[in-house]
Image (cartoon, rainbow, N blue to C red; front, side):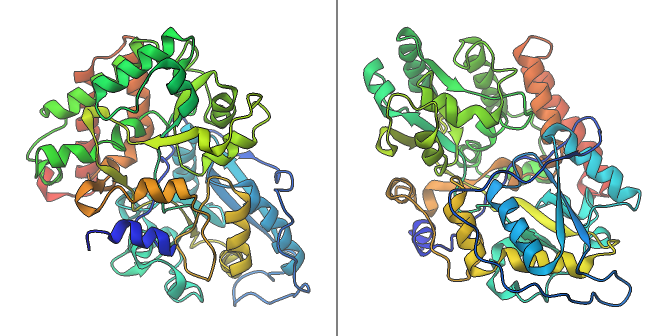
Length: 467
């Protein structure tokens, strides 16, 4: 079992999955997004259009429109191309409603609670489905769908409640976010790949001395920064075994734990020392690959597949190749345990939808072999999906070599996937970290805020440990 992690990756069926971060913040109207331009190759050819009748009580499928509501960065351009082919094949139009990440969760919950949910809605799988999203009431049972047997049982567990699967994790759940770094810039600065936080700051100082901004940290999206802590936080339970269990039983708090304070203060150190550059508060995630391609920045927390996008960027005027980039673990609190993430952005069919059959057809279409392969081949940061339909994963040799370094004993679950009532407040924590960076909050206040919100969420869920 020691090599379970990497052997499953090589088979294309890694049991773990990855989450991006949940939306939150102020409510606003959804921002409809037109399908993006054609991806690198033509989407699979459509079959002859077929008009089908929906089940009793729903509208005729052909000629209808289904809405897919998702947070920013959850819908790939390649999927929208597949959406066009789906319309050609079925006559069903797909309206993608993409919402800014900091507004998404509040807007979605407002629509669900008002009985006006989108036909398909997105959410992070995991703990919050039953409590925050009331998935048993707001989503359709998908356990009997034709693709159910091909869906990863580990992902099904995360999108399900009490043994019933309500969702589909449609996201690359086989790798997490690591530090992607420019080997040439490191070499020119005399910096080495760090394994401790002190070595990381030393490398950053050397890069700054060469006129290179060390880390691209896009905070404008409101979700990216916190992963720099949570994707290293598996070290906490290694250093202090049982800390996660204590947090979940309300036997300790974030504010009481020195490790948690150290992690938060190390994030502030990175910002205070100028390692994120002058504009990190307004920098956006969508620009990450371009800035790394330009050589202006040396590092960014990204998925391994993003390296292909860096190399292909118009900003790559230096002629960087994939071999010029590498990966290392985020060394917050000197972490050297691989971050493993069994949850991710997932799709759910709204139980009150008038187009349930059409929505089911769409999910089934996405999981056809040719369409899964199309997404893998055309979305640079998607190397696989948590289904097995005969697709060929796109893991690079570098990704496989990197993951091969870590067995089960040297890997661990990210913080939001093991600590109750944490992921639900993702955007709030990011906002507090930003406030700490500019001096409006202290690290103690950030941690206390996490504890206070956890208590509120736990009590709302009727958790006996908080009574």
